[in-house]
Image (cartoon, rainbow, N blue to C red; front, side):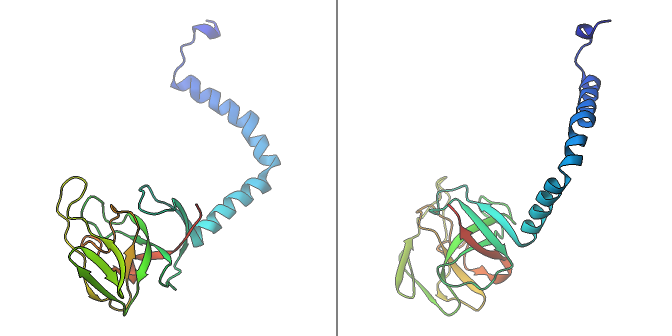
Length: 181
């Protein structure tokens, strides 16, 4: 039987892969072990202290962030990454990135559907989602200790002006997010 008569199957593909691995990859790794070991080590070290966050919506002017894990020294104007509590269109545990516009002790007020933090206009809460579901208004009053009012400039952003998001407790914050682009 000739090579052309052998039907390509899983066993044949496996054999080809093994030949490639032993003839090409193992010699390459033996020669370049320091580079590949350093790269894997750098990735593991980076992931221990940082993570990348990518926003998939148009709610923020930036799309890619570096999140400094555990950096909870958060000030007004910082971006934070936090875990969604669940409810609405998203599963619990998803990561969100928003800008902090209110911190503990700040006063959140609303006039109709317009929201203000310390008298500064934030945005107007729309009455319904894009799919027509009603949206309840978020909390007002003095922001308690270890909570944040989060904001994004887009009209469809799911931020603290809506009850689904509310004020973000510190224990759900993953870290401070630094916008890259």
